[in-house]
Each structure stands twice: as C-alpha cells, then as structure tokens.
Length: 299
Image: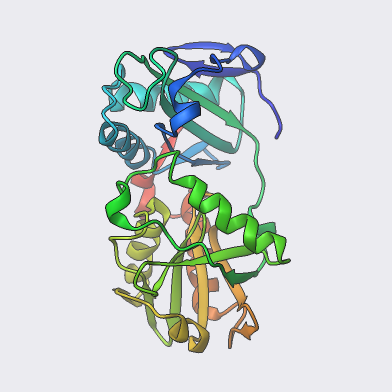
C-alpha cells in the first residue's frame, strides 16, 4: 500500500502514521465496524468520486444496523471524503471510510464504547490484475442472511470473504466464487456476479448478497444500452453454460471471467461484457454527461 500524508480521523486530519487506536478497541475484537470502498477517477475536470452519495448513505445505514449513532451526517461525511482526496493531492485513488466502536467497555455489547470515524485515501491500480479472471467455486458459502444484516457492509462478516479468497488464491485461481445457503451462486468475496446469454444479463437476486453500488450502476447502464437484465437465482450449471460471465465491484469495476474451475467460458472476454465495461469506464472518466450525477468532482 502506498501511504499518503493525511487521514481524516473523527473530524480532523492527522498524519498517516499518527492515525492509531487502542489495542482494546471494541471493533478490533468483535468485528462491529462498517466500511465502504470508493473509487476516485482521474478526469479532464479533475478527480471525480464515483457514486459518493450512495456510498455514504450505505455507510450510515450499515453503521446504524449495528447500533452506531454516528457523530457526523451523511453530508458531513461526503465533505470529509472530498477533503481527504484534496488534502492528499490525489488525481485518482481508493477511498476507505470506516466507522467503528472504539476503546471503552470490552464486552460483546458495545455500550460504553465511543463511535469513531476515519477516512483514508491512497493510490490503487487495477484489481484482479486487470484481466479476465480465472475463478473457483469455494467451500466457504456466503453467510446465511439471517445470521447478519445481509445488505449492510460490516467488517465482521468479511471474515467469510477472506476465507473464500484465501481458498481460491491458495489453489492458484484469481478469485473465488461463493454459493448461497440454497446452493445457488451468491457472489465473489468482494464482487457481484453476472452471466450473459445473448442480449440477456442475469445476476443473483438480493437477499443473500451485498447489494453492490457498482452492481446497481451496471444494471442501470446495461438496461440503458438495450440489454434485458434479470435479478433472479442463478445456478452454477447456468454459469458453466453461459456465453459470458463477469464480476462487478468498486475494486473490480467490470472484470470478465475466463473460467470457473475447469469450465472455460464460451467467450472469455465477451462482446457484451466488453461493451458494458467500455461504457462504464467512459462514465467514471467523465466522458458521458448522461451519468454526470454519478460523479462528485473534487474542486
């Protein structure tokens, strides 16, 4: 990771090396935090933050889902994000907000622990090597929706994602693919999943998966481009037989999938995936004014 100069910490900027917490911080022990991953893109009009308002709205929702009363409003968090990019003089970067219960009472219930908020940003290149991914179905299934808040982005449940990613990487694959408790495809450890057949794009329905912001953006974009988009259960056999498959995510953007275990896609980098990816990149680079509301420019 390339460090930058400043991290926004509870409303003030501190040097990167001084952004520290106590070892008895509640969230360190119990996974009681919420976070976001946000891309900032270089454009002709300066840095642009992708879907900033939606990311901060989800951060507030996720935080409240574990009982946090944030000391900052969504609008204050948005301004902090802009200021973090600006003070570090970044043209493009990855932005990480995190809310967490700090040092106080060390018991499972977080009463007596302060709510703290940080915002960090650093340069980050292509994820998944920027090429068609070779993925593997892993034994670690996606957490059952009744065991957590499935539509919140919480730190604790990401142990599930970490185990899935380690399993796939340990077997020489680019990334993992998780099934849900019913045996249908859920998502990657940090990505949503899509299949393509002809002009129809299908993606697992909400319920067991994280409702990704890039996912929802790509659904809107694909429909605008004339494709039929279905949100429904997707089986592994369907994915094996599909014309194309791809991942979406803040880090992954739109990443084609070349194979699932020993099953090679009919089109490792298909024309529909390529079309959606190219149009998505135009949007985030500020080259399609139709979607200008998706970008927040850092002045």
